[in-house]
Length: 93
Image (cartoon, rainbow, N blue to C red; front, side, top):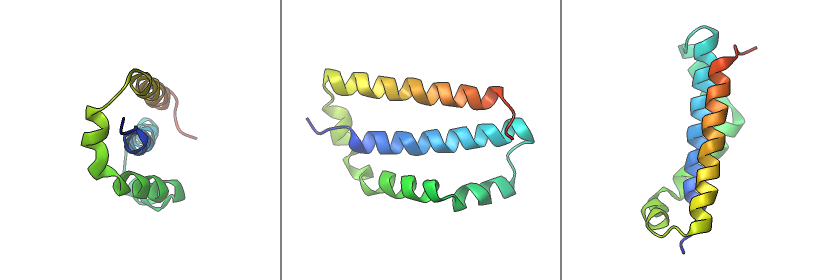
């Protein structure tokens, strides 16, 4: 099994981007200032670098998923969807 570390890193980046866009959209719409603040956030750069480092390994990881890895990714997807829906429901402070 190839593992799912790189898939999870890309998913974490997608989650971060989606949640921040949803928060800004609910508040006042996603604007350039939101994009600039988002791109300068320390956790964005960290997650971006982690996702990019192993992106070439995604096809191997995705083609060799076992049951436990599939269930782990399903749990990750459920968390991401829950966080995105929550960001859409409440205005950002």
